[in-house]
Image (cartoon, rainbow, N blue to C red; front, side, top):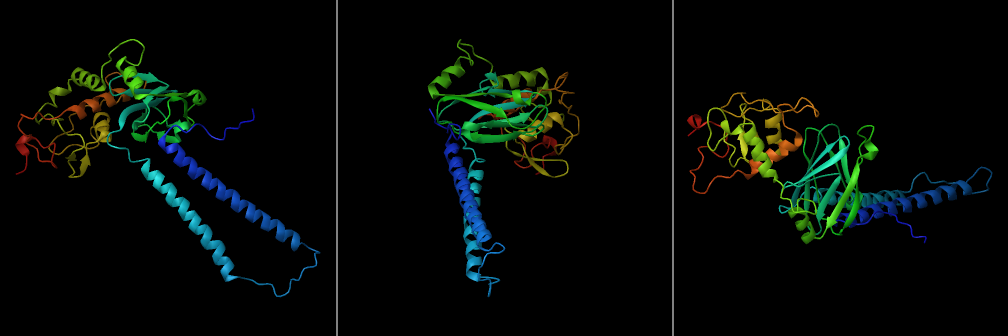
Length: 344
């Protein structure tokens, strides 16, 4: 009847680790608060005005005492710092086999998309025991994605991808919040994370996220459709041409810009190439590509939404050279130079 719950359920591999760190820091804080508080009270009472106490030959310093109360707390503080730093680094190094899910924050809802095309709003279904990597971006203002039961929180920022990873461990339904004030309905921007057994999750995905068998388009298929609808293939085909470079196999490859700087063709690079193609122009090309950045979140005329961009990026990731096709006439570092200008 009087059970008091001090913290949410521990439902991820990081939850227990962060709880140990939290309670260790709390215990040290309480310990030193009590010690210092009791000493203050003791000396205040013992040496208060009017109390007959021998005040002669008072020491103005005590080397061993000063070293003790300086070195011991320093070691404890460095221990907490090292512990926290280890967890910080660990939470930012997702495993290579992590399940990728994409999240878009917008006033005032969370939109999630699974790689096979299943979409959901203010809900996030996950398999237990599987590392999950969330790639997130905001469509308008700064939001913050927080799952208390996982002890994980990450700001979601407009114009930039941020990532968060975790491994759910306990099937159940958990709260999802936005913890960055994002407008008048900020308090309503919440939802639920549903952790399922892996077999149930696969069945849920196969049914299109519903209880009826519906096979949605995957993100790659959606991206390919957008690529064709926008006629991107006219400039970005299987081989480099003067109108534009090939996108086959470029993901995570180094690209040489006009100013001879080198950039990695990651998600951020590809998003900027669609929204602001003139920011960094590939060596050997001119600024002929149009921008697909929409005028506003409400006016997508001629542009691509953040969801569209994620789909196109997934399609570009899927482009791989055919085993029988000739190697592209592009050196690994100088990608983007038209075939007639490839250096020897």
